[in-house]
Structures are given as C-alpha cells and as structure tokens.
Amino acid sequence: MQDVVIIGGGVMGCLSALNLLDAGMSVTLIERGSTGREASWAGGGIVSPLYPWRYSEAISALAHWSQDYYPGLGAKLAAETGIDPEVTPCGLMWLDHEEREQALAWAARHHTGLQNMDAAFVYDRVPHLASGFQGALWHEGLANVRNPRLMAALKVWLTQQPAFTLLENTEVTGLLEDSGRVTGVRYAGGEVSAGAVVLAAGAWSGDWLKPIGVDLPVAPVKGEMLLYKREAGWLSTMVLFQGRYALPRRDGHILVGSTLEHVGYDKQTTHQALESLSESAIRMLPELAETPPVGQWAGLRPGSPEGVPYIGEVPNRPGLWLNAGHYRNGLVLAPASCRLLADLMTGNRPAIDPAAYCLDGRISYAG
Image 1 (tube, rainbow, N blue to C red):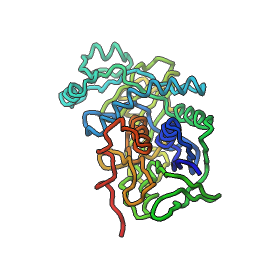
Image 2: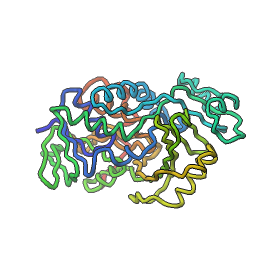
Image 3: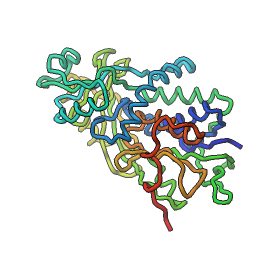
C-alpha cells in the first residue's frame, strides 16, 4: 500500500510527488500518456503571470513564493540528474503598455522590482526590436524556465527515489472506496491502494470528476506556440507586446506565443495561428521575417474561473485531493501549489494561507 497515488504526470503531479517524497511518504504516480508531455511541456515557461497586476492576491502569493523557489530547484535538478532546466533570470519588458500606472502601483504594494524605462534603455537592451517603441515596464531578473527540460529532469529525479513508482501509459479507470473514503485507484492492469489520492490531471480534471458527481469548473483552453532559431544571445530578454511574447532560450531558440482557443480537447495546430503568431513576432522583432519558424505546437491549459487553482481535499470524498485549475499560470504557480498541497496532506503548517484555494463553496455536487 502506498501513502499517496497521484493521477497526472504534469508539473503539478511531479512537483507534488517531489514534495511528498521529501516529507517521507511513498508515492505512485499514474500518467495515461508520457510524463510531462501535455501543457507542462507546451507552455512558454515564464516564471510570472503575463500581467501580474491584473490578478488576485491568491495568484500573487503563489507566484512570489514560486519565483523565489525556482533557482534552487533548477540547481538541485541539474546537479542530481545532469539535466539543466535552465532557470534563466533574463528579465521581462512589457513594451508600450497602457496599464503602466496600475502596474507600478501593484509593484509598489508587492515590493517588486518592476520599473518604467525609456526608449533608450529599451533599445540598448534589445537592439533588434522594431522601431517606434516609446518605453517599457521592466522587471529585471524575472526568469524563464526551459519547461521540457524541467519535466525531463523531474522524471529522472523521481524515478531515482526508492519510495517512488511511475506507471506511464496507464489510464486510471476509477477510485477505490471504503466506507465513504477514497482508498486508492483502479486501472486497466490492476489497482493501487493508498492512504490518499491526488488528482492533478490538468485540463482533464473537470471531466475526470464528473462521473463521481463532482462539478469542478476546469476545462481545456488551447494555446499554440511558434519556435524560431537565431544565434545564441540574439534576444537577451523576454519581450511582450499586445498580449504576445517572445522568450529567449540560452541556445538561441525563441518561443513566440500564444493563442487562446476554446475548442475542447483539440490539439491540432492551425494555419490561422501560424499567421497570427508570425505577425506578432515580426511586429516585435522584424528580423524574424527572414527566419521561418522551426516549430509549431499546441497544448491544453486547465481553464478555470479567475485562474485561482483548487488545492485541497474534496469535501464529500475524504481521501481525494485536488491540485488543479491553474489556467495560464501552471508553471509559475506549481512550486507553491505543490508545497501547499503537501503541507495540507502531512499536517505541516502551510507555507501559504490555504483559504483562497480550498474547495468549500467553489465546487458543486450532482444529486
């Protein structure tokens, strides 16, 4: 019997497992496909909400905790697995952003390094920008993480732990229950008994819970991305303009994203998205018109109201826990969300006030 079974092998499932293992628990993680190959792989990896001043304090608290945690996590995983997640503090510019006063007021309240900079600073920092920008909001040191490498490193680290079991390409078909308490899971090849079950199935979490009468307002929202390749250092910082961003990787790859499409579980890329993202890329960095994209892909975000995740035990299903509904901010909120989940499950004093994320009053039940 395991202490915990986790359903879902994305960043939420993997970091939940890491925290629970660190707390001395045994963990089985079950992923219906390949670990880390859904939204956690597809996203850009900015260690910040795109517009942090637009979000509630619930999002800000998780984001700030995670931003402080990522450098150490990246260093630990690189040292112990040989795979560097490339947590890179390259900074982010919001070009000619109309919410300057709101953003600066938010930054003052939260004691962040967000500043207003003039055009001379902008073009000195990013000389390949299109002409005509008047200035930017600038957050020096804000990082991005190379999320496919983060997921690969997490998988290697987890599978090295003796108290961890990974079942990939395995679909959970139901829950085991005893006297009203969830006691494990059933899958095609058998079952696993456990003291607790964690659902961290991303965009699929809402549909997963429907058969047991739990109405969780989480649904898939597609995002498409483009990938370009220039020489290393060509773009030295992240830039964002009119809702689209360009993110540099250390080897010269540049990610441009992303779309926001409500099309169910469709992950097909589209020519319309290719044209739209290409136009946004060239509007910021016109020399990319000379460089055809080298990749296009799509992922499914776990859309939820206001983007505030659901972290805690399901009130009418003791033994069943959720860590889901992070919408556009899964990678940035994951470290704090998973630490909070582990604190709640182990009875430790929570690192973050859990009240905003609990399920009471935020989900409903059929029947």
